[in-house]
Image (tube, rainbow, N blue to C red; front, side):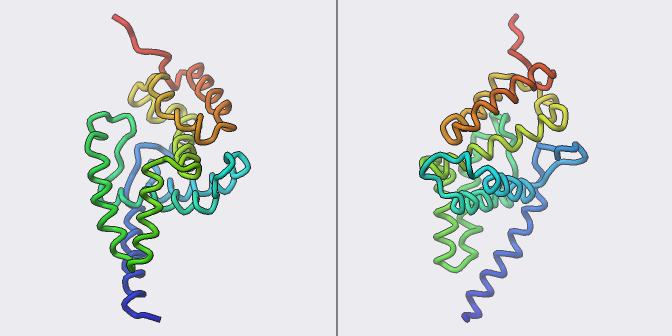
Length: 201
């Protein structure tokens, strides 16, 4: 066993504990508090395991789970950017790329390459597995907002067209789940959680 290798691995493990400190906009399903990014990552990794039967052909569930567990580690440095914040999202990619460089290079070189490759694959969103993982990443906050009475949709007066744009990757990434998503959005509009359309003057 290499002491230096183990030291690097332990350093990385200690560093990623900081993801528990990153608060997301989304509240828990019981609306008691905001979730943190570590909880979010665990939750959608469990979603991948639970909803594996709905994955399109060519999806590697174990690979998807790995991506979902590491995809938000960059928020340790970059913070969480609200998905409907247009201005905040302008430099999000640059901040997260810098964070990925620092965080993954804490690991031994072989593990650094593996995790960086997983993160890059998720961000590119081109493989069937990355598309499925991204679809689940869009469904998870949808479920939270539906369960907690509108959550961030109500706080920020989010419209149906904004939500539809946000969840669009589900249609190709997890097509079997797309009808469920559409039904859920319709129900949330009826419930008043999502605005039907922009007000025209």
